[in-house]
Amino acid sequence: MAGSDRPSVLLVEDEAAQREVLAYNLQAEGYDVRAAADGDEALMMVAEALPDLILLDWMLPHVSGLEVCRRLRQRPETRLVPILMLSARSEEVDRVRGLETGADDYMVKPYSVAELMARLKAHLRRARPAVAGGVLEWGDIRLDGETHRVSRSDKALKLGPTEFRLLTTLMERPGRVFSREQLLDRVWGRDIYVDTRTVDVHIGRLRKALTVHGDDDPLRTVRGAGYSLG
Image (cartoon, rainbow, N blue to C red; front, side):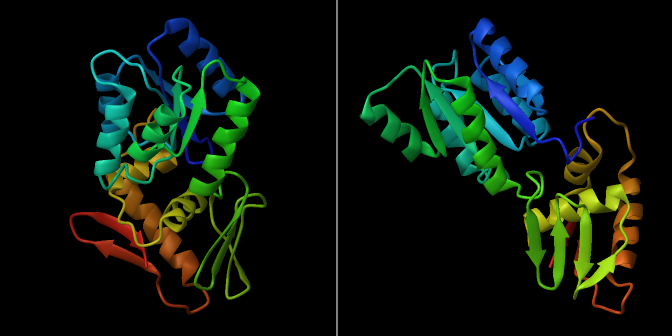
């Protein structure tokens, strides 16, 4: 299952052998991996389910990695997804071009797999701190990704695993409105069929847990759109 506690990586690489090696290494590190062989397929897969990070090769058939990067940076929903670009182009001018197009990092082939994994982990830590065992804070709410503890105004709150993942997702992007489908994808995972009404039930439970000590409800329901924190 591709739930919130397993970061998802979209690997975009047209060379089959290279794709297999990278996918194997990523899976061994505990990532939920999906792979695309060209730019068109990559854009389609991102539209289907938002990954936590994109590993993107520059030289791709049809739509180049550079163009994929540019398009993703133009869309509000994919603007903040970390993109790590891989390229055989080692000139400084190419590196600058890749970063200016919107890539968060640029690695020249051949690269060390260990270094790639370390960089990938660092970008994920910044993008999704709780997944990397970090602490998230919003107002008087504190969530510890490592110990799975949540408190509000220093009072411990009891949350089920689903509510914990829901709160993690909302706290990672305060103010952002998540649709029910996006929450299903992040919290339950793509491999599980769950009705969107299930999201409403768990949001109700999360609300109850967050207001158990008489505090205000920090969750906002946006009619026809979904839910957000704050």
